[in-house]
Image (cartoon, rainbow, N blue to C red):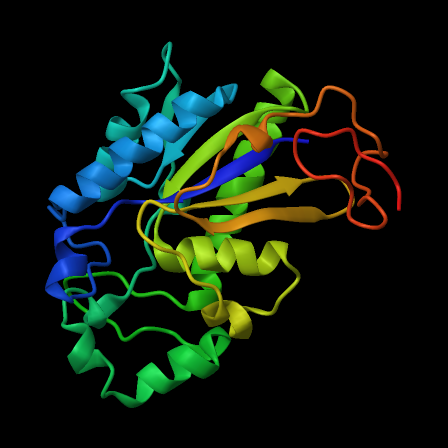
Length: 245
């Protein structure tokens, strides 16, 4: 089944300023973020992954990340934008300093019971709950996964360029964890987290990879187990013939 590489955008000017960017327009990568995205592109090129498509959040920092990481790749990779991969809509929290937000009562709920959180309304920015954010992000991933499976086959590999909380929510769901546990997952700028969806269950292949060899994510030539089954005992690892035990 298709494999999605969940890429968080590179470090942004909002990250270094210590503010919650949300859907603030004009937030771009800083110099470090640009270098991170370029380095990831080189890793992807070296791995030789057969990328079917790159799908990005509509926000500038994600589109910019996609631009930079595709530059080292051979050949043109189709690009699309999906609003479902956009940042959580933080409403009145948008653009405010993180240090200031951490003093509010809602911050504790965001940390401990995120499934109960709905961000405060604002005239300038839309607000949503974290559960709504997770639901529309998962819908975007499943929709794209199904489309690329239909057009490119079950071994399709694609990239979703998105945001920290969004990726954490997707990985949390794939691992079978409740949304209330998603804060246990850490996702760095320009990191890669990988999920392979099957008809039986998702497999979380990597989380917060910021420097590993990505060649092991190439589709296997001879799957050793039925589609959707895990290898009993853990298998031999990427690049080796799978064996039971």
